[in-house]
Image (cartoon, rainbow, N blue to C red):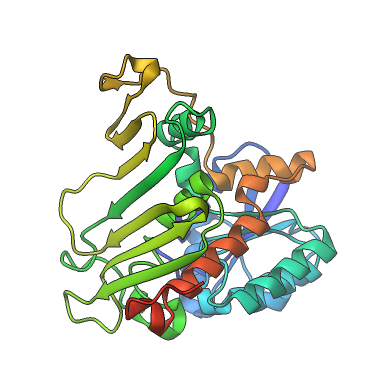
Length: 323
């Protein structure tokens, strides 16, 4: 039985992660910690578990086998490295860190402590996206030339995001580093490691960080990937488009493809894989079974930080390609 401590309720997904963990076989949410005493007391009462007075108390408790990190991103290096050094398994919200240097420090801690580490990349558990990757990997579309992912919501115009999500010091940016992480890691999952990135960021609602964003990634061989995101779009479903020399596919509510396998006609692909558990639930099983999950592992987490850091470089926002 993996006993987990929830670390901070700062992130909007913290409550959801706690619920997922509490309902996962082989797992018990045994405690919570938050820097705000009232928050941790109320959260502990809600979950029926211990409220730890300090993060040090969590790490010193031998009953706690893993921690779920939901702090602000700027705190990730400190809290994750300390958890690794204390022998705790680590699940973390994306992104891993604000800089590549800090991401590599975390990687070193994960490797030297043999930490069971998982980062939350839930779109890798979407059956339509999984099937799309299978088609790409099998060469059904020929050589890939272009891919585009659009993932948006109305958080800024409907004003439901917490104010701290617009704090650059805590978050490292706005829409792209938060919601845009999903298109970014999906493009890397489909196309490999990019060579360069250029960005256009705007603040439609005049917040301190961008709420409307596009990054264009160049991959080896001249392949282009486009990551689109924002907090200012209404009623836009998730969109994935992939084009190749022999066909194309699109995820837009359903998965459709047009290639030799479909008679070169646009058809819905209905034979989707079974939906896997979300990464947070897979993490529990991986810790209990003593296995690693490379699709959600430290190297993929570091790559996302590297791409995000480049996307936010001033040169990238001015149209230059940042390697």
